[in-house]
Length: 337
Picture 1: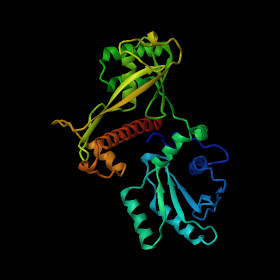
Picture 2 (picture 1 turned 180 degrees about the vertical axis):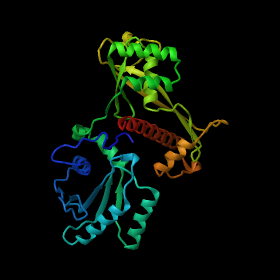
Picture 3 (picture 1 turned 90 degrees about the vertical axis):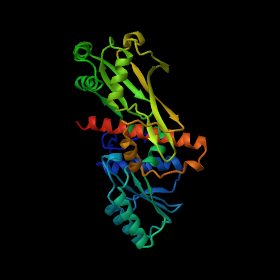
Picture 4 (picture 1 turned 135 degrees about the horizontal axis):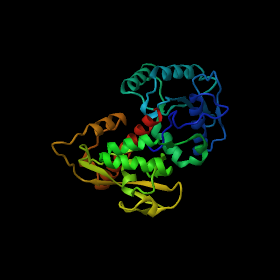
């Protein structure tokens, strides 16, 4: 997902006083922007199982959130209790569609519990609008909610040094880079083309584009391995580069050769290259893809019934989501330190 709505990035602004209220506000703003429904209202506590109600369309929304967002889970019991309340007030607040608006997904067990309850009680027209739905709306209407979001991450000098170590730089180089970074007090900002994350990195203008690229790749946990998707018999891997003012920069250039600003803005550019086959060696490990497929509740496709273009688009889409999940997970961990 491109946008993440966890407590690490979603700001609580007055009159909201807690994370749950802030999430409800985000949902309310995005729905108003998307549907331009003047009949939309928010129902204050006690909410009777409904937080947002579009009166003209008779559509109800109950907002449920986890402060961990995509790395958290939504409680099925809370959702069931809200649906029970909404059913009880249906005579006064009539709804023909009920959406559970979440910034996180259910576990497989929780999702099944919810489905079993709905089936046993013969309740229809209840659906989840999960994090992917709200991420798509955020991309369309970012200007409406930008003041609620802060995706900046200021790294420490020690975190940069640790990134060099993970990138397997020799100790002699690491010691030299550490001294230069500590002396220069220079900050580089790096955005990327797959998420709104912005890294502020203490660096040295004497280091190279390749040095910076290695740090960013490590911090964001971007894996360069080719990922296999066996249901479509396709695979894909990322290609990475650093751009400045939309121009791709050579790896050997020093930062000072590219810019003179005290806080230059680079973009970490990720291109996804796909193949209409799989590539596997004895050392390949597809655990990452399997974990992603389970997390995203991805269904299998029949490659025999798909066109070449459909396989390409699906492979690129899956790979982008896989990369986004890795990037968000890595930044969340750094935020929580």
